[in-house]
Each structure stands twice: as C-alpha cells, then as structure tokens.
Length: 342
Image (cartoon, rainbow, N blue to C red; front, side, top):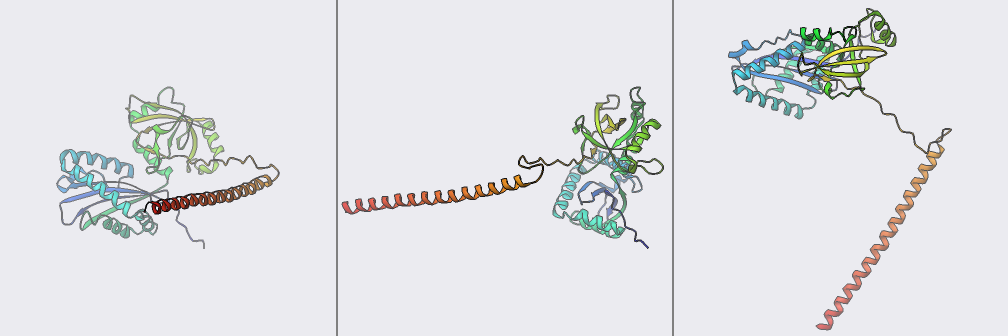
C-alpha cells in the first residue's frame, strides 16, 4: 500500500481572532507564510466596546477576510484615534518578534503539516505573550497554491465596474486571465515593463480556438475538464490605467502562443516575478573540439600569477633591505654628530 504524501502548498494562510482574558481588548489578524518560512502579516487591536465594527469572520475566504480587516481598521482608528498609535506599536512588535525568531514561520508550517491546530494556537499565543497576557484565540487555516490564491483574488476583486470595462468593444473578444499573485516577494504590476514575461492563470477562454491553442501548447497545465491547474507564462504587451475605475486598477493585455488575454489588476497587489536562468557566457579560450585551450590558458595564468607573486616578493625584500640600510646610515650619522658636539 502506497503511503500518501501531503504536498506542501505554496502558501499557508492563518487567520485569527481573539481577546485577552484580563483586558477589554480584542485582536484580529493573519499570517501568510511561504514554503521557505517568509511571512506577511496584518493585525488589529481594538476595544471590545467597538467589536460590532469588526466584520471579518474566520469562515470568510482569505481575500474577503483581508478586505474586511482593512475596512475594520479604518473604522476603529477613526472612531478611537488612540488605537492608531497602539496598532502602530503592535506592528513594530510583530516585526521585531519575526526578526528575533526567524524560524516562527517554519514552526507554523511544521505544525500545519501535522494538522495540529492546537500547536499553531500555542505558537501564536507565545508569539504575542510579551504584548498581551492570557490571549484566548480562535484560528482558521487555508493552504493554497499561487494559482488558487490568484483565482481567489480575481473572484473577490471583480466588481461590476471592472466587468463593464472588460466588456469594452476592443476587449470583448479576448480571453480572461489573472496574473499569479505572490503576496510576499512579488512586485506591483506598475513595476513590470512592456515585453516582460509574466505568470498568469486562465479564467475564461473567449472561444474554442483559443482554448485549443493553449491546451495543446501546455497539456500538463490543464486537467481533464479543461481547468487551468498550473501557472502559464506569457508576455505583457500593454498596460493602461482605467479612469472609469480609478488609479488603483490597471488594465493589462498578455500574449501567449498567439492567444491574447485581458485582466484588470489592483496596483497594490504583488505579482509573482518570473525566474529566468541567466545563460553562462562561453569563454573565448574554449575550443569547440575540447577544453584543452581553456585548461592551457588556466595553467599559464596560474604560472603567470605565481611568477608575478615571486617577483613581487623579491621586489618587496630588496625594497625593505634598501630602506633598512638608509635608516642604519642615518642613525650612524646622528650618533657621530652627537659625539662630536658632546
């Protein structure tokens, strides 16, 4: 019987809500952890008297939870300005804790791999113990690939205004896509240059011909039902700020295997950066038939370096000898002058 191996997803998303048992303050936030332990976070501390303003629920999909948490933070800090200062201090505390314990993210990943939520709770309570005492906590966990995360982003960021733009006359015949989101190490779409490669996932094909071209080119990236299951890479061919929506969104077009895709992206969203292997520059001393010339050149260079080093050592020795002679002669002259006048 083959043992089942759990595949580690690209991102661990841990949402939490709780309150101190000895104060009248509540807490809400999240940690997003990459496979290597890198962490992105957000957190909110608020007075329990204003808990009705905290609309994020642990059952919400992460992108909904994230948006509601941001909205709740704005409401709380407007209603209670003192909590703006408190939350700034909380942010600094979290950053310092992550710096002090770089393995915190890895510990969360290890506990999640064992599906042990109690250990994950204990890790977070311990993480905050120098900030808040006796923290009672509830958590929810989502394991996601970059592709799944990107699809969730596209689902919960597509408003009616965006849909109306995507239906524009010059766009209506293009397939729909969304760039792969990397919330920790990515960069804004505004930083991508036209012609640069970009990872993306297919949301919807405009016609069967486009579907056939892409599926035939990347058969392993689609399942039997035609769902895109692995990121694709295309070329960014245009970027455009859409005034009807505002400066926070950018319309992009992506080309891949002769098929054109459209997407509207939140400019503050971090997009995954394609990794390109830089080819090694061939040595001018390499012979096409063998590497003898390179080896010969390498040996000659080593011999030249050794010879130069020997010469340098000899020059330094003679320089030192001459300098010592002059110093000695000067000392003798000084002694003669002193004896002459004494």
